[in-house]
Image 1 (cartoon, one colour):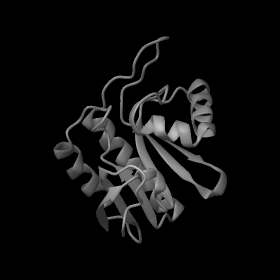
Image 2 (cartoon, one colour):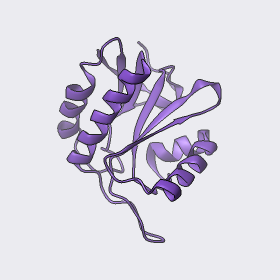
Image 3 (tube, one colour):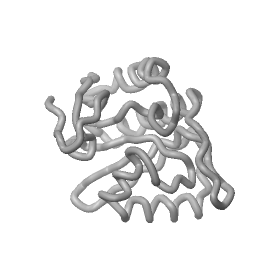
Image 4 (tube, helix red, strand yellow):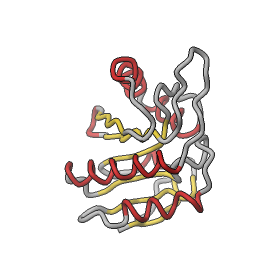
Length: 161
């Protein structure tokens, strides 16, 4: 079941939070920057993961932190491999691959609640009108899982629901 909410995803009580990034992302803007500031160890672990495995766009990397926080980093954007390069924009095929992988992960892990923003629409540059149907297609049928889609960001406010 999908519930559309307004609030600050970082205040979510969901069992897992998902967000879009690029392979080798520096987490310097958008939601990724807020996550870097809140969970600096996630960013450090992500950088190490990227340096050792060289992930590709369309893949997913799960991070688990202190206190039970779990963050699925969905690589919706094209990578920035060269020194000083900026990540590319997100693509619908990358989003589709990530959502399929997220569906599989949530099912395997038995996640009962998932929080996700308007994926790939900020820094990623895609239109929510194009991404929303993919979110509904891939996450709307998750058994025993409530998916909280943060359609509207409200700083410092927990979503209701």
